[in-house]
Image (cartoon, rainbow, N blue to C red; front, side, top):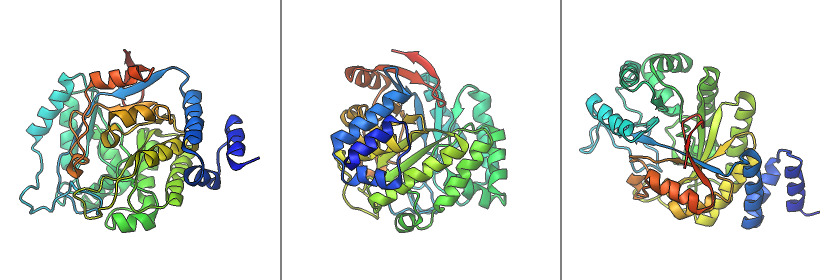
Length: 356
C-alpha cells in the first residue's frame, strides 16, 4: 500500500496524521488527491451545505510599530510623515459605519506603539462597549498584548484580564506568521517568539476567550516549518479547545523589505488542504479572499475551507502590499451560491445568524 492510500485509510478511521505523513502530503502527493481528502474532512465536520461569513471591519488604530517586521509594508516609525494614531472620534465613527452595515465583529489591530499603555485600550474598549453593546470586540494580537503588558509594567495574564474586563471579547490569531523561531528570526527578528504567541492564546482560552489561529506562509519557511506550525496549533487545541478557526494566508511581498515571489495558487490550495486534514480538531478553516481573490476563494471551498471570513469594510495591512481585493456581503453570498453552497451569516463564535 502506498503512502497516500495508507493516509486515506487513517483518515477513514478518523485517526490523526503524523508529521511525516503531513509532510508527504505537502511535498509529494497530488494536489487533487489531497484536495479530495480535505474536502472529505470538511464534510465530516460540516455535513450541511453551508458556507459561513461574518460582517466585520478591521480598524487599524495606528501604523506606528516598533517591531518593524521585514514582511510588513504597513508599519511606520513614530516620526514618519505618514505615521498616524486614530483619534477616538475617528475610531467610533468607523465602528458606527460597521454597525450601520449590520456588522457584528470589530477587528482592531495596529502596531506596537511606543506610548499606548493599557489605560488607553481600557478606556477605548469601555467606550465601544457602552455605545455598541452587541458588537464583538475581536481585537489585538498576542504581540500587541505582550507589548501593552510590558509597556504598562504588567504580567501578560494580568494585562489580558484587564483588557477582557474592559470589553475585549476574543483575540485574533495575527502575528503567528510561522510558529518556528528560526523562521521568525529571519522575517520578524524583533517580534515575540512562538512560545510567547502560544502562551497568550492558552491564557486567553483559560479566561474563556475564544481565539483564531493564522499562518502566513510563502516567505522564507520550508515545508517542514509549515507542518510544524500546524502541529503546534493542533497541540494547543488538544489542550484548550479554544480556537474557533484556522486561517492560512500567503505573504504579499510588494513594498516590503523581505521581497520575493508570491506563492502560487497551487501552493495556496495545497497548504489549505493539508491544514484541513491535520487540524481535524479545529472546526473551521477560512479561505483568504483578501490575499487570493474571489475565484481562488471559491475553489478553496472544495479544498477544505468552509468559511469565507469577513466582509472587511476596511483593511489596510494587506492593502499596503498592493493587494486590494474587496468583496461586499452580496458578492460573498453570490460566490457561495455559485459554488453550490448555502451562504450563512455568522458571528465571531460561528453561531448562525441568517441563511440566504
